Length: 309
Image (cartoon, rainbow, N blue to C red; front, side):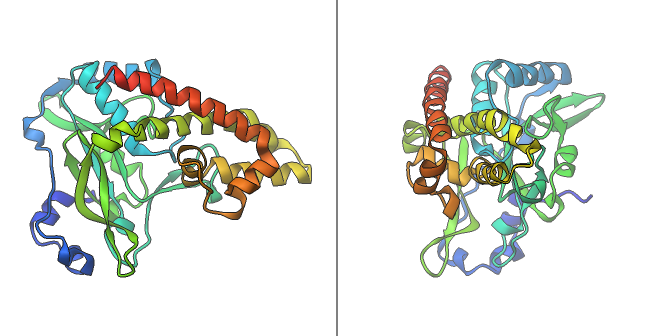
């Protein structure tokens, strides 16, 4: 597999893909807060493995629901690396064609081990994870901490690329760790497109104070809890009513956009069977259970984050 193209290099050196997008014409100078790996501290594998093991085991981050927001997982891991482990790092962002080219809908993808999604495939319009510099023999290598893909150890950068479908058709860059999320371009009808516009937001102001990260982490927690308690037991049933219930619950709790709308924003979902009226009419017991759990986990994550600010 060929590695994806370095997006920072492409943007600064007259990218062909940018020239094809009329949305970029009004942008002005491209702002790109890249991280120079040469300035990062180099660690031993043992030191990074120790931090990795603690992050995966000691702080209750849900890594077994990969469709949940990677930017939230990356941010809480970044804050832990900085404040708990005093570890110098950056974030590596990976953008597939759907985020780069108008009319190209190829996404990143991985296998859905929970079988919640159609075709057991989780698709991402982007992906992000913390990265560090590590000494291996006489080489300095970049390693990615991404337990949503490998929960046993950090991965070498090329291993991370190889684990993600369409990464060889994508572009990547290393960003400063305080960059929380990116902005998209507006299209001709003045609605947001999927196209990355080259700018990022920090974890501050409304993003921080509105508990955006904490809500995303709580969503991941409730999704996997409901999955184990209510969805898995239905898989072995041959009853037609259970098959309908199974599909509905998969559509609700396997869809992070619907969960964000239902629980974080308290507005209707995006499909007929994820609207408030449908889910409350048919699954009020599970939705009420999930809402209580969401509030509990939101409180937990807010308290954790407060210790890291």
